[in-house]
Length: 559
Ligand code: SRM
Ligand code: SF4
Image 1 (cartoon, rainbow, N blue to C red):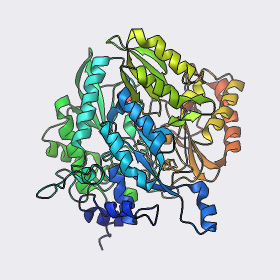
Image 2: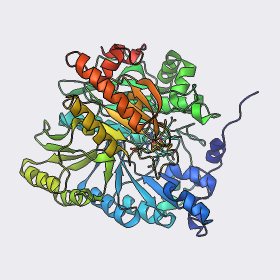
Image 3: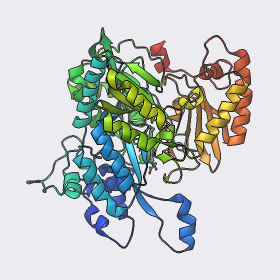
Image 4: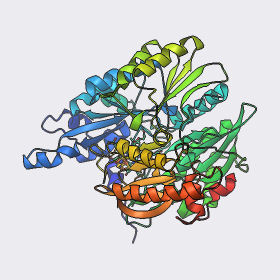
């Protein structure tokens, strides 16, 4: 007997191209929530319904409905915005959000704590600044990542333009967003979704563009990846990758993190056709019964990569050439000033947990506002929750640096902290099983003490923590991954290679933070004594057999 399609499929198909009953849900003043079907549809418009989990129990006891609010995520291909746009982003956070801006692992920003009645004014305000939230969530292509590293300025600009074109091509074409939020006129003669069709994709879809030797976008963890191939600063084309993803479910062995397969090399002008063909193949072959198996990585496992490649070739009417050789040096960001080939300066700032606010110890939000008021280049959010003040002219360098320093944006940080990220988790994330963002700074302080004890301060060990196995901080490609299992407990994963080319593996299950620190104390001691010259911690854990080595075509391709 055929399996039944899941409930979300019906919600999408009957939503009248993503309209649902959003208007009446928003207008309903009796509840802070949306109608349940609208709480799914709203994701395509860029926002999620949440409730403050810290208050759940207390409100239940007082027979109150949960304290509902919304998280909105913008669409910002490549993470780039102007200083004028930043000033709007900042003002909106204060007036209509919870007073903070949260930079994400996909180069955009989120507002938390938006009340239902504030959604429309908020969307209108950001749209006035030419920022939208269309398809930043939902079963469509999400925010397109692009290496924000501007060293080879002209090459970066060209690659970034391709990232924007791909983003545009893969946007849903429904006018529902304009009608509902921007009071646009209904479309005459009805709607069409030429690429997605009436039921959109079976699941979320993610695209990234990398510029070697930097793998800050963790390109192999995306459904679709483009790796720029350049010679003497000229873009020759892209190696195309497909089928990466992080999300798993504890206890369900049929779910797994996966690195993308190489499809082959294409010329730049073929990028959009290939992106559309990959999306269309996933639309037609993806699993619409089980959402747990609906990502492209499972579609490719089912079809086989050869069949998948042929299908894409046929749809895009091209043949992939063999992938070109590339070398990635590391994942994560580089900090401080660098000068691009066009002479402009770029300052990468570390933002702890990507959370920008006026914090007790540093007025980060005010600092960035002051910078935006004078800066004439751009702002670039990195794929690791950090921020680049980009395109600074020589004459403004000192002024920007002084503003950043005065507002705590250039405080000294350890290598351990600079190479770590945590997801949002509690109190807003409904999926969180344990803390991440809130406990991470202190946890990193404890790790700093350990590496100091073992003389490992100069090591750049990539550490990532998430509150559940969905993998929002990409913990399965970290050298040390901590994946939430339950209140206060985590799975400890070891063995990433610091370049994002190898998945780590489970080392110990269900450990409390004190146990994790004890384990790492022992392992760091061993590493300090037994490591080979320039051997990374992740490589060491594999070599000495702490976690098993497995066949890894991605690494083989690169070595
Ligand atoms: Fe994520 C769901 C936060 C990047 C895999 N993610 C969520 C939700 C919306 C929870 C929910 O389902 O209601 C989280 C909202 C928390 C909150 O309160 O803000 C959430 N994800 C985030 C962010 C904000 C983490 C961060 O600290 O930066 C990132 C926002 C990215 C963006 O701007 O678009 C974020 N999420 C990721 C990544 C990393 C990436 O894409 O590079 C992943 C792993 C890659 C992947 O998709 O495989 C990721 N998020 C998930 C999943 C698991 C998907 C799966 O295939 O199983 C979920 C749950 C789901 O989709 O059902 C999820
Ligand atoms: Fe929430 Fe889990 Fe994503 Fe963390 S990894 S933000 S806990 S869904």
